[in-house]
Image (cartoon, rainbow, N blue to C red; front, top):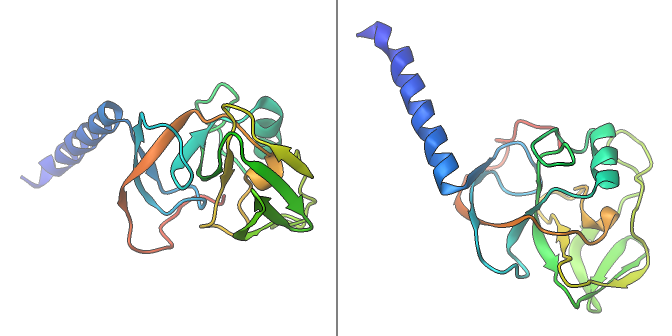
Length: 179
């Protein structure tokens, strides 16, 4: 009986994998930008406060990989999709003043722009100043991780899909990645 436990573990893992693929589930244990947990891909129209994933553009993805802000993955740009909260939607006006972000004139509380990353390197900004979000473009930020590499640096991006939490782990510190 004891020799069968590896088979049971294999069957369990295969079953979970099939369930994940069939239900469009995403496990977040690597990214510090969202609470660790299980998220489901949904067909809802993106709205403020929802979670979303983006594969980012080539220049942003390349910089993220080079600086180890992002991990390699299945996006056509070679990265894993970044998962963040939607803060700005098409038609919103976004403005950076000093180290703060304002959306439609209101400050995004707790979101600050840093000049240096955790390794002391300058953080390149693809976006500065003021802009209105065009149709199909969103502002994705993390209020979960204070030094997240997100739209405060790369500006507005397309969303590849919207996520909703299925289960959020009730404690911090479960992440296994460095970003």
